[in-house]
Structures are given as C-alpha cells and as structure tokens.
Length: 362
Image (tube, rainbow, N blue to C red; front, side, top):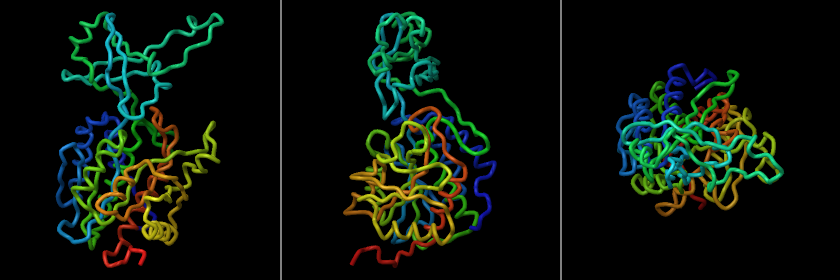
C-alpha cells in the first residue's frame, strides 16, 4: 500500500455528507443508504437485515468468513412529555449528555419533515441572588420550538416518541482534525468503507469472504452486532470504534489510560480480544511502520467486539479504536493522520489473514 495519502477529496465529500446526515439509534436508514452508495462500486453484493444493519460482501462463497465492522447510529433524544404551553421534555436515546444540551439547536424529526427547535435555559441574570444554581439534568432541560400550546406542537407532527438530534455539522479544523457530532462511530463506517475501496482499487484478491458491516443500535447495547453476527456466523471479526483521548483537561490518566490523538489507532487488549489475532495486528503494525497505541479494557470493551466475540460459540475478535476528543458531544474530534493509519492497518491485516492459520491455542 505504501505511504501515499489514502483519503482523497471524494472521500472527504462523502465523510462530510455522512456525518451531517442524522442517524439516530433506531432511525439509521438514510445514513446507511449514503454509506452503501459509497461502497457499492467496491463490493460484489450486499444485504440488509430487519433492523437496518447494512453489509457489503467481497468475494462471496468462501468457507472462511471475516468481518470488519463499525456502528452507524448516533446518540439522540426522544420526546417524552409536552407541556400545556408547548415546551418539550425528553429522555435519552443512547448516552446523550444532558450537561451540553442548554442553548443547543436541535432538529425534531417528524413524519412531516424536520421541525427546528433549541434547548432553552434561564438567563444568567435570573440565576443570581444567592441561591444555589441548578445544574442541567434530565429533569429540567427542555426544548422550545416556538409553539405556545401543546396543540400547536402536536399540529407540527411532534408527539411522544419523536426523535430529536443536535444540529451541528462536520468541519475540518486547522488541517489536522475532523470535528462534528456522531464521529462516534461514523468515523468507523468511513474507515471500513475506505478499506473496501482500497482493496478494490488495488485489485486485491482475498482468500476468504469479507463482510463489511455497518451495524445499528450499538449505542443502546450492541444490539445490531448481536443480530448480525448470528446471521453471518463469522470465523473472525475486526471491530473498529472510537476511544477517549485522555490528554485533554479533567481526565485522570491513571484511571482512563494515556491515549492521545496523533499517536495512531489504539489496539485494545481485553478478555474479548483473541490473543493470536491481537498479536497479528500489532506485528503487522510494527512491520509496516504504522503508528499505534496500546489500550486496555477491564471486564468488557463496551463495543461491538463483545457481541461478536461471545457469539456462535466464540468468534476470533479484536478491537482497533480511533482516539477521539470530547465523546458524546457535538464537537467530537479525531485526527486525519490517525484515520489514515487505521485504514492502513486494517487493510494490511486483512492481507495477512490466512484461513489455514491455526488461531486456536492448542
């Protein structure tokens, strides 16, 4: 593959469209269509499961089955209660952060289209006077969409269960970082799509069937991965997600490890990670001079790796993560050079996988 730049202008155009398109948990389909259209020229066939996980297939029909996987859903909110004077209270759909909500603009996704709104918050002037300030909580954050009655809200197509996303878009910062909401984990979807593209453009013939999987519903418990691994029944799975850059203020490295954007992707060690595959990944990175960082997870990785590893009697699985700043905010940040390294690493590892290799311990 060499050291040529892997991400081109067309790639960035796709990434921007992909990030900007809302893809909340349970409502991922429009983002999935964008992703599929991008990888279609580079796969042999595809299929979609009942809940919206999209799978591109390369070299179908082989006995040995390999998955590279990311998840496509983003955190969001559900309308939970509408007051008589037209204000909206919400509950989480995934791990949405109530502390960043006040003053954020939102898109309310109705059957009639998007209704604009924002999370309101009392002005600083009204919060003075010696009393202890109230912090944002799920109980006191609310959305104002300009309506003055519950009836007006309902007329706009907003009802309990309507999904709400933040209105923040993709940007490139200082020619170094990608910034936006939902980089967790549509950056992973971007990476595996780029791997498929480079395999195709470099005319690489794999000795196994490769499933390029963009799964749904990770943010609510790895549900999409749980379903699709039972469908595919893979022999081996490489999962990519994001992990915390711990170099920013207020993060304890003794607790969360020493991970930093710009040092390369993170190869995780955890009970769910099969050690022979782990060694293949780290040795491939060293041989190809691809920068990487070591990571560690305790009982679980908290990613789709766990769903794959503990399915079907045990699937040979590994996790390679992209360092990310400010997870589950609207200004998530990853480095372009880390993204390039992750694409390169997964690509090179796939070329090293031999179905005849004994991944078992004995």
